Image: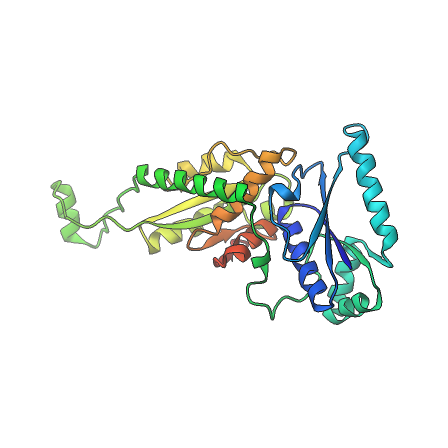
Length: 311
């Protein structure tokens, strides 16, 4: 048996779970998932994603004794029992270093050597390069599917209401300049809208803030408009000031998941983050943030091309 405890944020957990699924399958292990609710991730697996085919899962809570004595005791008991059953145990840094230094063969060797292996992980630890669309095993529960459809319909309504500004008259187009000055209608068809996803990670992600500054996104978004005047943007960010800034920069072009929760310490906040990840994947392409597993997974789950906006 392979026991996986995915850790950290939503994207990290999806990555760790996918590595574990294919590592278990390649080595004829059953897969058990230990899904931990904790400070910074207040959502059980059963309210987010379906278990991968053949996997079982155990949901535990780890909010600390001061906040949830009973939940902490139960969670500790489950983890202690499972860890004692394992012949080999890996911490996140250990499994990551082992994979990065020795590769897939060493992971396979350990899984074949021991009957039960327990892995905590935040990063990929198995080679998925030969697998077609490996993240297809990550599937939203019906609750998330319904919310995603509803929010997508609100984005479509926003798109209908948005009026994309008319492009400025090209100073080299004398006919158009004269027509504009005389107030004549040139009868040019309105540009056809197309939607680009933009994920701007802020708050506590120091690397994204440093390597993917706002001005770089502004320049890249303007380039999309220059290429296709009908461009609109679905903007995903964990900082509402970014929403305000981009609406000022690109009036009539920004679509938002309104009234979403940004709290990672609430069920709604984690669910809304997953919905936002799925919504990015409905766009034609994604402009993402540096070293963000959220940008990465939005692309991987949908197959939508990702361009990391970074200096």
